Each structure stands twice: as structure tokens, then as C-alpha cells.
Length: 304
Image (cartoon, rainbow, N blue to C red; front, top):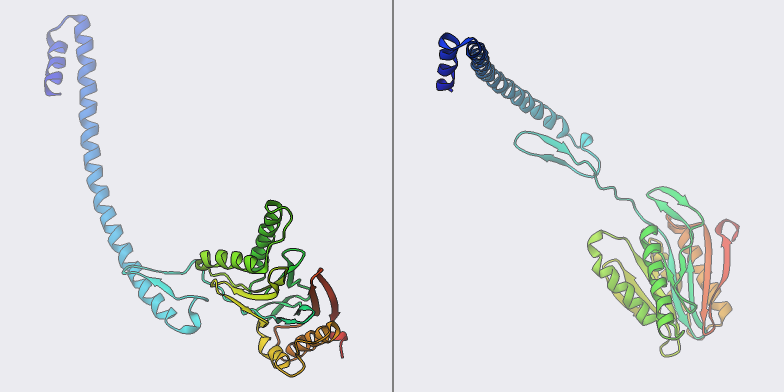
């Protein structure tokens, strides 16, 4: 650059008319370039100093605010709902999406007798202390001979039981119309829930029905993937009250259909009298060798 500037100045002094014009223009351009470079260096140094000063003061003020805010939020009454404070060396951040935990409540039961399987449920859906619905369908069909009950999160239960229903339908299409067994259906949903156990699901279902090879059977499956076979189950917040009725001498294997249905109604009714999360309608379903059918549905307020 120094040689270029020297050549331009030589042409401006000793060259011809045309060379003098070109040399003068080159000297002017080089002078403007050097002046702009010096100005930028001076301004850059000034800005760096100002930025350092501003960053130091901002960091100090933010640290002071952190100390005051942390002291203010140390009182449990001012803690964000559902979680604490994410705190580092320089700042704190309340959790952006604090976990919300709502209590679930329901009463569902099923038992086997000589004529088939009885499933009885209430119809109240609650969100904590709030009654979200009084007419929730808590018994969902899986196939012509299999039913599934809902206890836990309504969305979780209904989604996975509907998925099981599609698997049961696919089984019929592949195997020339032969229905899926209760054992196989319960194993399918158990495996699916176990594979998704890290999703914090809330599922407690009873898969019940009839199959010519196995007869009448009931399986309890929940969101951990557990699978238990039995002849009587009660699931939900009102299950202990329902079991108090089912464990009496009224439940016998040789009951008639009318006696079995009446026992299911009585168990659900007593559970709803003591459990605030249960209520609405009583629904009773009966599974026989011919398939399932709904045999009773009535508002609890009208039952005396």
C-alpha cells in the first residue's frame, strides 16, 4: 500500500496531464482509505471500553436482583406451583411448565359368576375437586365378547383401549373371523403400556370377556405393564368401598344373572355414597357366551 501511494504521488507531480489527473485521484482515494481506517480503530477501542463497563454494571445489578429475588422466593408461599426454582451462579428461572397433578377418582368393578362376567361402573369424571362430567362412558368395547374399563386418566385409558380394539379387529381379519382371546388382548395392552411406561401415563383397566378355549376371564392391567388374572377386581378411588360389598356372602359363583347384576349395582352405589370422586350414573354390563350387552343404566340420584 505504501508503494502504491508513492507511485500515485509521483504520477501527480511529474507525469503528463492525463497521468497527473489519475495520480491525483489515486492520492485522494488512498488518503481517504487511511483516514477511515484510523477512525474505525479509534471508535472500536472506545466501544470496547464502554461495552466492558456496561457488562460489568449489568452483571452486578443482575446479581443484586438475584439475591433479592431469591430471598423473596425463599418463602414457600411464593414458590411457583408444581416446582421449585432453577438457580445458577448468575440467575434464577422459574420452571416454564410446572407439572400439574390432579387427583383422579372413579369406581369400577368386575367379577365372574356361573353365567358370565358382570362389569359395573360409575360415570363421574373429576379434575381434582371439580366434576368435569357426569356421563362419562367408562366401559369401552374391544370386540364382540371383550370389554375394557377405564380408571385413571380418561384420555390415556380411552386412547389405549381404542388402540386395542383396532388390534382385535385386525386379528379377526387375519384369522378368518376368529376373535381374539381375552388373554391375548390383555397381553397386547400390557406390552404396549410397559413400552410406554416412561410417558407418565395413568391407566388402570380391566380386560374381561369370553373365549371358547379359556371360558370367562378377567385381567387387570395398569400403566406399569402389570397384568394380573383373577375372578374379581375393583379399581379406582372407591374400590375399597365396593370390595366391602363384594367380599360378603352375597357374592357366590352360582348366582343367577339377576342376582349378579343386583350385586354390581349395590357395590357401586355404596362406593359412591362414601367416595366423593365417584357418582353420576350406574352402568352395568353382562358378558355371556353370546357376547356383551348393557343391562342397567340409571342416575344415582333416582336410586333409593
